[in-house]
Length: 328
Length: 174
Image (cartoon, rainbow over all chains, first blue to last red; front, side, top):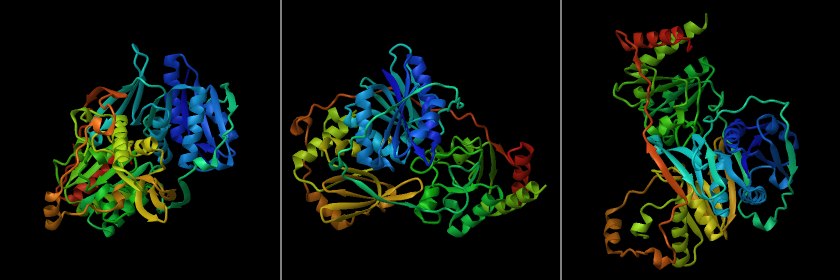
């Protein structure tokens, strides 16, 4: 019996969500008195096993194969099924990432179990020793706690909701290689190209400060003012869904349940009403500041500081004052 | 149409099981389209489940779908852009909101719809026993927002903008 975490990586580093998964998995494994296993899939990735151990794993299962270099849905589901059948995890944690949200439901069906996606909290029920998985439902308006009777109890976790351990290189662990043994015929859907749509400036998911606009910004032209402020703050521009749907900004900067889920230090929401779908994407921000003409707008229920009025008048003055203040 | 009280409180497994059984009963298919996620649970699993149960490939979160001879070419939305994926048919594709706008029904369409008789199947019609759940809901609640908004004063919007910046500096957010 073990708690397993599928750990994703990019380049020569584990992704933050992989470390968050290991942090969450470590707590659950300790509560159950089980070892924590990391599952590492890719090509030429052996070197990452040590960081997985430093971040909490007792065992690292490595599936290293040129066919697994990048995420390919059928290949990844096949090898994860193989690992799951071999190590029999009682709990299997996967990140709610581009790959994770795609593969977790398939893997669950293939293993004859269930997955609770996009969890924001995981705990062990003291009486039943089963996993209690908390996730937002109804577009972020409510939270639901789920459990299941089938193993592995699979979950995907939302980014930045779990705490990683401080890496400790003195930690000991075991690395186990498993042959991928892929059957080429089982790979049907193929990713033939990956296109990165460049967004100028800082990536919104990495930005400490985000200036986001809503429907009320009114045009692509209007977003230029938000960009100016974002540049000044060394941050990124975000948006709620309407500006993306209207092509004022690229879809990749959409913040919300069906866009990016971010947790910057500062989130400045300009002309955003604050629907629960949108707030699901930014409620992890440390400080939310809102500018909106409607005092009753939902955004003010989440904001720490608010200004009620026409953003076209407030924002230029705000930006000018910020420029003055930070130049000292 | 699958309609029965047994489907009312279905979890993803039961939903996917019922839909895949109905698809099999309906006969041959090339392409099954599903939405990205339900608006209540937001789980995003049904399409993948149908594909697994039918043993066909699945491509999720499509923003563009082009069927070609025996294949489907899909642009899949990712956090940094998109992926181009090719899958042999038959296949399941789930679509994201970027794929397009809903059509408004025309008067002609509404009239034509009135003449159509929906086929309604019960669990027994598609050979399943619906009603079981693999996932149990233990608790459902509304989180409380503790944040209390401090509204920034000002004689006019410009002054408000100034005062907001000064406030953020004062509390060391800037």
